[in-house]
Image (cartoon, rainbow, N blue to C red):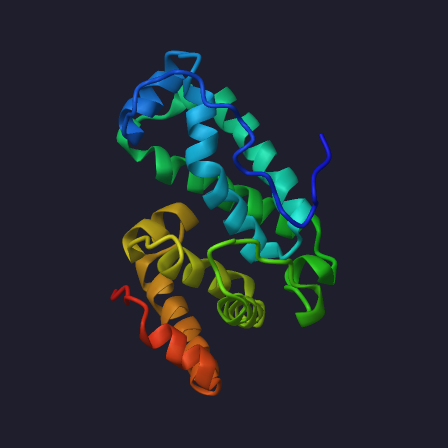
Length: 211
């Protein structure tokens, strides 16, 4: 089928008939090779995985390819999941390991930079007005000015709403390091946002995730 490469089709897997289950039951269904489970897992978690790769590396096509690769690995190795209720964290840990590997493998500058403002992908949410799209694009540009670890910690905290303890576990670094990294990233982002009245007004209306 023809796909607009700027609009990643993250919900292209037809959902098979299956129960409406939580993450724990979904994990157990995957381990039991239930036919409906892979499609449900993809549709539930692929947007999150794709977003993490996109925010970290800034390349929509690479983010799509890596998302597909991650799910091949997850489906092949899900039998090793020890705690079924931790499926989301299990998937995030796969993403983190892949990000670390790709960062080492591709040390060329383009993998450690983010979008130039003119290269930001089109944000295709039909319910979002042009002004909100512009605000979101500028925020993504700010994320790109952070270092790789700062960007990952800040995104996991404020986009994925993970607790600092969870971030430390999936990144395999100490909680104190996560706290220092988050404080540094949050201070920089806050300073940049304060310098942009439209962004400051937008985020003033958003809920905060306190540490």
